[in-house]
Structure formats: C-alpha cells, structure tokens
Image (cartoon, rainbow, N blue to C red):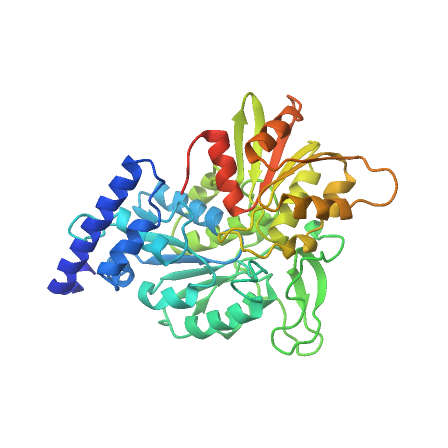
Length: 445
C-alpha cells in the first residue's frame, strides 16, 4: 500500500523517519534508555499523520490488542507464533502502548525512505487511547482482552471505556474481525452489538471456579438492563459464566474449547492470554500444530511471570498493577510452597497516582499463610498498613519487613529466601522496571 502515499507525504515521512532514527541512535549510544517513545514523539511533530502513513504500508494488516491486563503477554505470544511461520512483524515489544510508543515500534522497521516492509504489525494499545488510534491504524483484527478498574485517576470506570470502544469500533469496515473475551460481561455485550465479524474466547472449565466473588469485582450487573447477573461461577474478578434473569443476556459462546488447550506460564489469567492469541492465530490461517508447539515452549515477557536466577536463587517477577491482577498474582504465590515475597508499590504516572486500589486486593490470603513479606516502593507505608490491617486478631505468623530502599529490600528478600525456594516479587509497573534494572543491570525503557 506504500505506493498510495503522495510524493510530498513521502518526502515529509522520509525526513521524519531519518530524524527519529538519529534520535534512537543517540539515546541508545549514550545508554539513556531503549528509545521506545521519544523517536515517535519527535517524528510525529514533523509528520502528524505518521501513524496512518506507516500502518497503511503493513502488508497483511495491523493486529490491535487492548485491555487492562495481559496485553504484553498476548502480543508476544501471537508475535512468536507468526514469526515461526516466517512472517516479519513490527511489534511494540517494550510495552510502550501510547501513541508515541506505537509510532516508534513502526519506525523501527522502516527504512530511511519511510518504507515499512513488514507482513503484520502487532500493537498492544492502552485501553484509554483505543478510540484515538483506530481510525489511523484501521486494524485487521482487534483483540479485546478484559476491562478492569485500573488507574481511576486517569481512566474512570469500565463502563465508560466500553461505551467509547463500542461507538468507535462499530464505524470500522465490515471486514474487521473483533475478538472479545466472552467471560467479561461488558465485552461479551460489546461483541454482540457490533456489525463486524466477531469471534469470542473464554473458559469452559468449572473446576477452576473461585470459591466466592472477590472484592476486586467491577461488572456483576447486566450491561443491557442493569439487573444483577446470575453467575454459575467466576474464574477471576467478574469473568465467569453468567446469565441475566431479567433480560436473558448471557455469555457468548467461545470459538475454541478452552479445555483442549494448555496454557502459557503460571496463573489462570494466562489461560485467557493463550486463548486470545490462539483464536487470532487460527483466524490468520496458522496451523494448530505450530500454535500448540509455540505455547508449550513460550518464554515470558519481561516482568510477566518472568523467571530469573540471581546469585544462585530463583526469582519470579509477577507484575501487579491493579486489584484484579494483584489478586491473581497472590493466587499464584499462595498456591506455591515458597514463603518469601517482596511487594513494591509505586504511585508514578505509569502506575496511576491513586493507590487506594490496594484496599480492594485480597491481601488477607497472603498474610494468612505467614512467612516473610518484604515491602518497599514510593508508597511503602501505605502497603505496610494494608498488610497490617489484613492480619486477624491474635498471634500472627507474618514476618513483615518494611524497607524504603528498593535495592536493600531486594537484598533482604533474597537473604530470607532458602536455596530450594523461589522469591516472588509483586511490583507495580514502574517498580517492575526498577526491580529488573537492579536484578539484571539493564534498563528496559
């Protein structure tokens, strides 16, 4: 589609790309970071239509992955599947999912003349900017993973985001394929309203139901009529098997039978990521043998159930950036026999400045099992207070260590981790980047 770009646009685009690549070289040469955002920001100033001009050159189309949790893992799995089939992929692998990050990802695969030579672009997109980028990207496939409360100071409630998604997606071409999570009432309803071709993914495994609906639940009311939904069971948060006794709204039927598929990594939430990527890959014509083999040999994205060996000890990093995600990582920890956990809470812009969400996390389950909990981060005392409130009256089995300095907190947690156990680290987003830099000596962003 590159020949459709006018000459003047081609010249401006080529200049923008040249400047962006120069910025990338300087930033990386001086070791100032991975240059995952700045090149796109500068190039966009030169050519405001940069996202459109680049994305329309992608040969087989753009795959957009949106949702609160699971974007990076799902995108990396789908990217790995397609690369194994020989396709060239543009992918924002660093997780920079705002507009400048998307542009930078496309710029990395563009030559100095502004020509983008890739088969697919797999772009994970922050849920709040989906309405802004759909028109310029014109995606071939949209994966809608889930909608949970996340950074309320920036985004607001999930119903608001869902309505904006529905309004904008419905204006896309009829050949667009939308793949929503059937187990999320809000997204199941979204898919049922769209005029495009819609495929669903979800679980059909009652043996994984939670014993009760957790505190971190957002959408237990019918998105059509507002009546309370009847749940046969929930898998995590408000994701589950549901019907509305008032209007008859119910869970959409998933395209794949979830019990037929193994899952990537630990945690039930990663089963959703597996099914989302597999559904998209099958839609793109990839054979099931390749998909299954890729799933069985998949390596985690940075900070997402990522396993490291530090000073001879195993460390697992489980990104925990909102109530639902943290409840799921706590479930992973409590299902293990390991007794040392490091929790790191920051309140910077990538994390959301409102940390009141920690009171919706079921930290009681983590505290009840005892062991050693080391806490750190910008809001270390808020986190320590939440954990103290999680203790039941009477004698506590918890060894709570409060350490403001992150480097010292990591060292302390490693000291308390026996040789035959794994140290689980549960950080918010900016904290995860800091933790990895301390552990590996390298920056990601």
